[in-house]
Structure formats: structure tokens, C-alpha cells
Length: 251
Picture 1: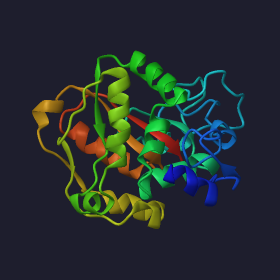
Picture 2: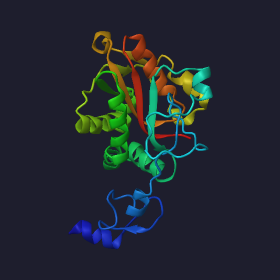
Picture 3: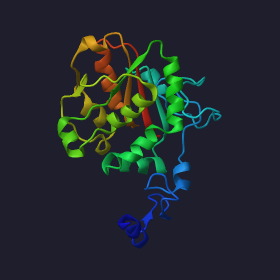
Picture 4: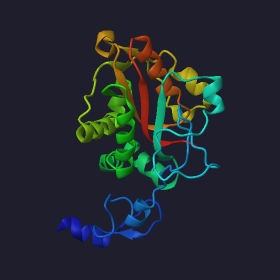
């Protein structure tokens, strides 16, 4: 009753368009249904390795494309990443970007759960898993213990838990660790990001991942420096294929 009265006196507004929202017009309590359902997802060919989209090419009938007939991008040819393939569901813009910020920095965990379980994410993951030569294992990109205390949760681990519940893929915990406290990547330029995470990750038990295919999970693919460094240490520790899955990607 109190919540209902407060909602009448101080109605919630959509974080994107600013319209008033009620329980009848929202499924996330932060965005109106029109904005939430209007989230942009990738539906064009992309680089078959790093997943960068090619907007100039024809759109694909399949959102969240896992592979493409399009050529490998110039950056992957020049500097091949350690991971074997990276896929992202949508561009880090507008509603999707605001939703991830609320999830990551404002403790709106229900938004992260909704994004991780979205039909587009499920379809893309299904496609990726079907292409894995052997059953994969999930590993969330870890936070340093100091950052974890500040934030109180690891957003990548929450996304991983949703994938685990939907697909039954086992999660390898306490294997990949962030041993060095680093500056937030969002504050740095491209070259600084790479230097910032170099040597930041270690693998605790090589035998556990030896020969295993890994799906590395994070919230946003920005320059790829973090996931590439993770893939590097995983492969040097004996991992098989390393795939990267994120909800969004900077474009």
C-alpha cells in the first residue's frame, strides 16, 4: 500500500525517454516498455573473430550473428587476438548503454538478469554452443577483491549465472583471478587500456582448464583489452578454444 501511494505521489520515470511509468507500463521498473522493447540489437554481418559489425553490408535475418561470410577485419589480421571468437548482442548505445550502467553501477541487478536472459542473448548463445567442438565451460571476467568490495557484486558473474541456469553449462569459479588492482578501463584510452590490464590476471589451477573450451563472460566489449588478456593467460595455462560473450559492444 505504501509503495502504491508513493508511486502516485512520486511517479517513476523512464530513464531513457522521461515518460511516467507504472507497473502496467514497465517490465523493468526503470524503462517504459516502448524503450525497453526498442533496444537495438546487432543484425548485420560481423568479423568472424572479434565480432565487430559491418553496418555497410546487408543486414542478417539472424540477430546476434555468431559467424559471418564477411571477411576478417583488418585489426584481427594485423594483431590476432588470443580469443577464438567474440560475440556481442547489441551496440553500447542509448537504452542498452543506460541499462548496463544502471546494472553495473547502481545495483539494479534485475536489469542485468533481464538482459542476460533476453531472447536475443539466448539465441546467440545457442548458436555459439552448437558450434563448439566440445562442451564448453563458463568463466566470468573477475573483479579485483577491492573493486568487488566497492561494488558488492561482480556483474559478469551475475550474467554467467543466468547463462548457467538456462543452458546448464558448468561454471569454473576461482580459476581466473585478478591479482592486480587496476584503474577503471572507462577512464583510459586504447593504448592505456592494454597496458592497464597486462599481467593483471592469473590462473589458479592449470589442470582444471587444460584442454577445455571456455566461454569468457563480460558485460561490455570496449576495446577487447580485458578479455584478450584473460584469453591470453587461459591459453597459456592450457585452455582449448576461448570464446567471448558480452551483452554489449562499443562501436
